[in-house]
Amino acid sequence: MSRITFALAKGRLAKKTLEILDKIDIRPVDLTDESRKLVFNSADDNYSFFLAKPSDVPTYVDYGVADIGIVGYDTILEEDRDLYECLDLKIGKCRMCVASYPEKKDLILGGEQIRVATKYPNIAKKYFESKNKKCEIIKLNGSVELGAVINLADCIVDIVESGKTLVENGLEVISDVCDLSARVIVNKVSIKTKYEEISKILKEMEENL
Ligand code: PRP
Picture 1 (cartoon, helix red, strand yellow):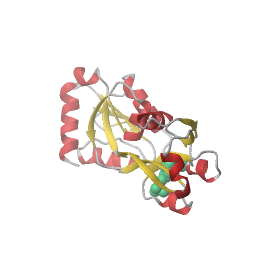
Picture 2 (cartoon, rainbow, N blue to C red; picture 1 turned 90 degrees about the vertical axis):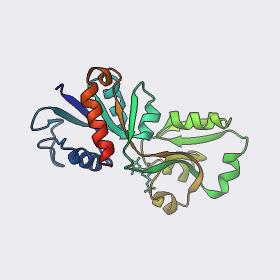
Picture 3 (cartoon, rainbow, N blue to C red; picture 1 turned 90 degrees about the horizontal axis):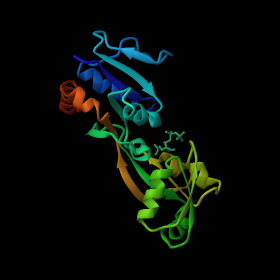
Picture 4 (cartoon, rainbow, N blue to C red; picture 1 turned 180 degrees about the vertical axis):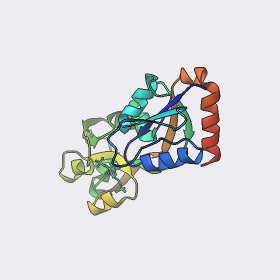
């Protein structure tokens, strides 16, 4: 069998992703929280794995250095690469939302141009374009809510999971952009050259959700 390489998103999804793979007997040797090693193999050498920054996972899969990637739908939408999106793992469920102070709701839904802070400029741009709403997008790299709180922007486009960050900062959801969860993506050449191995993995994953 050809070896299958997985690119897995570091962070929130990593533990649950490894649990799903473990259920179908695909497991890296020596991968621990403390390890600084970057690439791992399975005991039988049939699989290799690396953990990457989520936004880099689609890049690795697109270039074919990973056959399969597991990453949030937010990242897949934002990176917009030519990949097969094969399976919704139904983990890491959350929403992409437009959020702001309640008193800004009319401004955000009305005709005037607004400023939007986000870690997801492509998603935000497409969303507001679809609403024919003019906006200036300001890219932030984290703690996006701060963009609204300190008035850098009129609103944010960001992930809402529990909603705690919004509530604690007096912000609220103004509109929903889309639902999110972790997805399996596959390289377009790998799906042909390693069809049997990849189909088996996808089928087993789906049966074990
Ligand atoms: C995400 C997101 C929100 C927060 C939402 O940030 O960007 O800030 O989680 O979660 P909640 O609805 O459960 O409060 P994350 O913690 O991933 O880090 P970041 O702020 O550095 O982007």
